Length: 259
Image 1 (cartoon, helix red, strand yellow):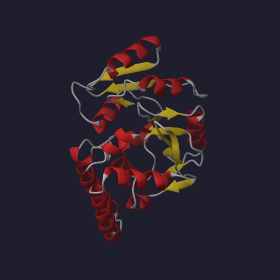
Image 2 (cartoon, one colour):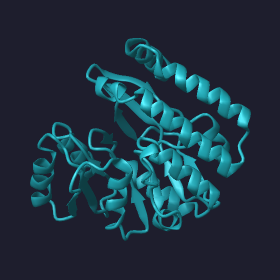
Image 3 (tube, one colour):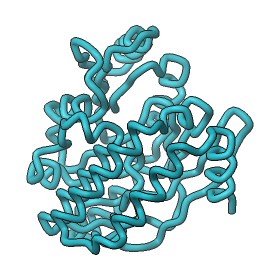
Image 4 (cartoon, helix red, strand yellow):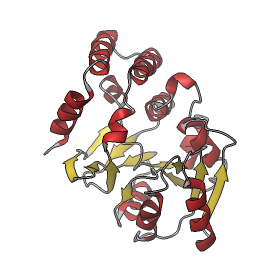
């Protein structure tokens, strides 16, 4: 778990892990130069739980670097992700571990997310399918925050790419690298994770991020030999979203997720 400016939500996130029906895990927290008291909150939690490993970047480095810092301490068969402002539902770990135990042909398992903000739940994702490289034409192949991955797969691709042009696209690029190595993944049908998708999350979707997204898609199309016509359509749509007023983007985003 990379943690950054999440002092107000971190305890709730960690409490959701201690409520898991599967309890054989350790928690690796890497604090990424927060401007609030995230580190102190994490330090207090670590003093009360002996399975927390707390490390710290010297300055803000971004999520891709931060997750690689976490991976330096991950020596387990499976590695799960989570964000410091989200909530894992109680059976998440149990069901993801069981899936990977029973399906050695898959290296990645994830779950659809329940989206919520300060006013409550407003949408749910869909799952129940194998996610292949063709999914990258339209966007990320898996939900990143609720995923669980075999440690060997992380090692085979060298973890996350730390190119600044891939900030906030570290998951998309990770799936590209894993697909290129022949790894496969599956999205469970059941929503087992709650993602906080409030106004702060919406404000992080800026034009620079859109341009980074186009670069990440370019790498995926080039590496995996995906159709270039789809890349041009994606690029045009991504730029259009970048100039869309925030309120309008927020409206369409939430409308798409309501079921």
